[in-house]
Length: 154
Image 1 (cartoon, rainbow, N blue to C red):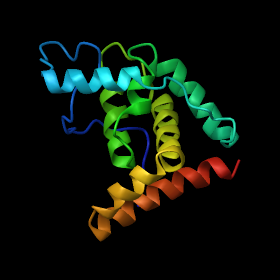
Image 2 (image 1 turned 90 degrees about the horizontal axis):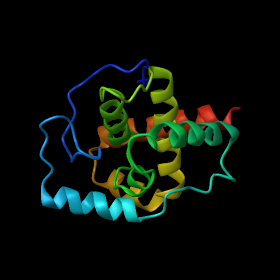
Image 3 (image 1 turned 90 degrees about the vertical axis):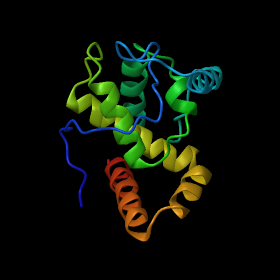
C-alpha cells in the first residue's frame, strides 16, 4: 500500500518525549531524560554529500525545521530506524502547537529520515526488520523502497 500524504493525526505510541520540555503537563522520567541527553551528545550533522539531490534537499528541510525546537543530534542519534517509527515521530512533532511544520515539510522530513536510516543505520534497520512479522517486514521494505525510488529517480 502506498504511503499517503498529507499526514493524518493518529494516536502515537509514547516511546518517550523527545521535545525539550514535553507537552504541557508532561513529566519526563529520569530514564527518558538520560536517553535524550545521550542522543544530544552525539553527532549533530550528517554527511549527505553522496546522497541523491532529493535527499540532500530533504536534509536541508530537516536541518532548518527541526533545529528550531531541539538539537539535530536528537533525531540523528535516536534509535528510530523503521518508516513507521519515523512517521510517528514526525507526526508528533508536526502537531506540537508551535512547530509550524506543514504537511509538505513533514513529508520531506519523513522521507529524508527514512532514506538516511536505510543508508547510515543499515545494520540497525536489518536487525529491527528481522524481529518483525513477515507482513510488517514486507510493509516496511515497501516504504523504504518507495522513498529510495523517489530520491533516486530525480
